[in-house]
Length: 258
Length: 258
Image 1 (cartoon, helix red, strand yellow):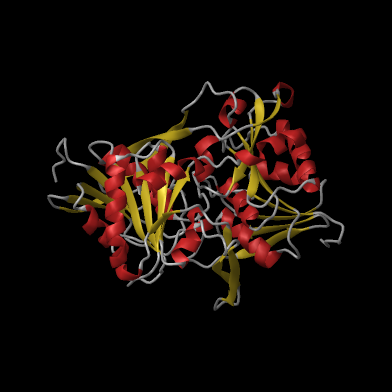
Image 2 (image 1 turned 60 degrees about the vertical axis):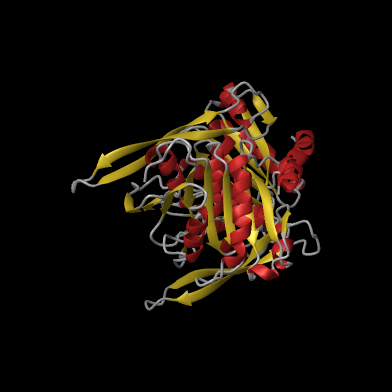
């Protein structure tokens, strides 16, 4: 692949691994927008959040190259992959980072655990316009066809109107066929959390171990301006996300108490 | 340890492991405030962000118990540890979660990678008043004595005035002796990022691998209302942090473009 000066250069990544249907869908769509560099792990690295690999070395391998794309396998986390691509693998700063399509919603508090969204956050820390896409289905054979039109619309917009520093997009799709999707809305992150249940088991030696399980609870299911409401009601949700986690609304109260 | 109805119950955790000086300092201080449950890993799990262990079982072991505290070793991430403690190990919801004292600053964008702050964020997703403490020194023999007075002041305040849902505190200390610390300020998260350099090496078989290294850059070093400015200028910084990452200021622009 040769990247010409007027080519758009797009970095693609995800956290479900190189063989995930969501990544394959995203690559197919994004090939129409520019030259692609894809970096991902060979297996899934879900729920890695913005973890970095600091105690192990990172390996990377060029797996595949044609005229339109270069595909790398990376041993690290999604955030490591973006750092390595930006600092070592790309010929220049990419015009866009697109992450996903994740198998599973990253709406509401799930953004905090998401490797897909960590890759987008990592991109915007480098001041690169970045977006994460997720489908509200954990199935490995999920149907991503409803995402196509919206991904094209969002990426066209982002390539002509870059995002301001420190902001990226969290896009979540309902798990519906294209004709049943009711449209796209700009939403805010719903207040919610995961209600955990741990499965407590005994290993063959009689020692206890736990499996983390759980289900997501939206704390404000009636609020119709949130990302979780949107995907539960057939809309594509687009949340602008900031890397600045300061709770500005609480600063004055805190000053009065300290 | 027996937790009586009028005891304060405090969950302590960190991401530098059970033998870290910062954790030992925090335990010593917090024993004056209530009954403690400590959960941490045996080794350091730095830069784990809010990663969860979903593909491996989690092990936990009661290591030590006396009248004032119970200490557990957990095989998971800092966020796993909080989830496990809240859901399986504690007799009731704790009055406070205190995480740290981290060896290394978690000011500015470092919060996004921090296991220490992930534990605090995890706590506030459960609507438990939570705080993360970090010292601006990576040294394993760092001097934490300057933190004592401020940790007592902050935890007294938090035990009498719980935080609102979805907000926790990110407290960073300058690496200075007590008498040189100039005071405590409420600050906002500085805009900054890590400038990465990867060390590229060859293994004995001639194959390339990378070590992630890098240094933090404050993008607004002159702004005196940020956490990074505070610790660089001898102050303790306290940032109220929200789990809501929505960039509200960009919503209208985004609506006009989509």
